[in-house]
Length: 307
Image 1 (cartoon, one colour):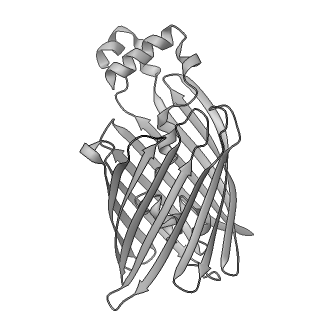
Image 2 (image 1 turned 90 degrees about the horizontal axis):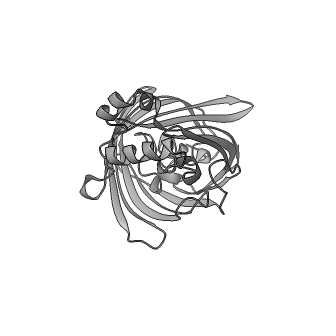
């Protein structure tokens, strides 16, 4: 990482970095991070409540409240802060904020020689707003996400549109989907779109409620990105609405490259309206593995066909 930073700093001094970079992978990764209250971002798209709404706003038509989360990536020193709020003003509105920052980008010895390098940073950030509306068993949403990317002093901004839908099939089955498309070219020329589909199935037992989830995602937002395909399976068990345990596994690949597996394990504890959530993400050889924690305050409003 430090060698790479030194190289980038050298390119910056020559004025070449601005011509090379339109968007860093830090922003691409941030767009696919979810809080600890969620399971796998691909598998849990139809799961409902906090587990799904970060990725698919329409998937939680009856959830209102606030979420604050933190994730620490063990590979590369990336710290991510996530926050969301849902409130009803006419329709249900969802607000999201996320920021990822890489620590120790520049070698301290290099900063000592060139103090101006201390102002350089690697930061990605976005703010999103979505409107959510429910009609019968169907919930839809539409919104915009404003993105910011700063790679060692070279910054760019962009806007992405997002639409999602969730349909309840009976009392225990749900289908959900989301489509994202880049509008602004500040982060690179817009590509086709990124799409995700998910399904969830509830099973009620004497011990608690078990939910099975599956999902797939494909596409890219900008031509500067490498197209990615991913799929995942997951399950969660809730005991008396106080304790929940979720686990998932999936695989993804870039373009025509090899498939790489990933897995998550999460635990949530709820005391009334307040919840605490913990999650660990596994990746091969520890690359990209991360720990996440989140706190939620939930105020539920019973919506037709929702949970």
